[in-house]
Image 1 (cartoon, rainbow, N blue to C red):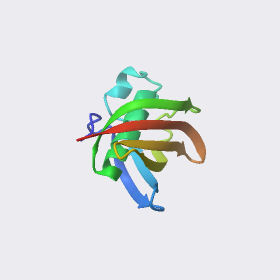
Image 2: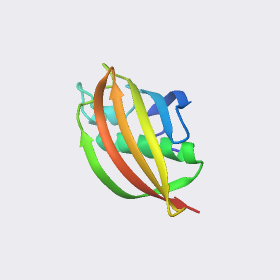
Image 3: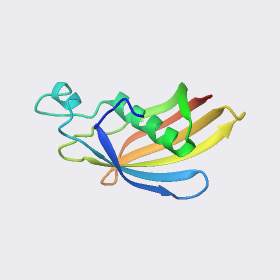
Length: 125
């Protein structure tokens, strides 16, 4: 269960291969987070995008995950939910030592890359 209640909805979930997924989400521009970030000019907080990547990774693995490391985190474009509510997450997963999940993500809207990151999560048993 996401801590981002009603912040986004998954519109499409596609397994591209054994380890690659394409997930289309729609942001809720009416969500209260945008009232403070920022009034009149909403911008999706980077930490919320990182949480969405975690949420989707938990759905893929069907496991609860704990973030242990982030590398190569690059916020490349602002996401205004009024102008670009539809986001595509391309996710690639690999497992390390049976208890870690490495997630590579590229999030984009309309062909514009907004976020690139690599996260490592510990599987919570």
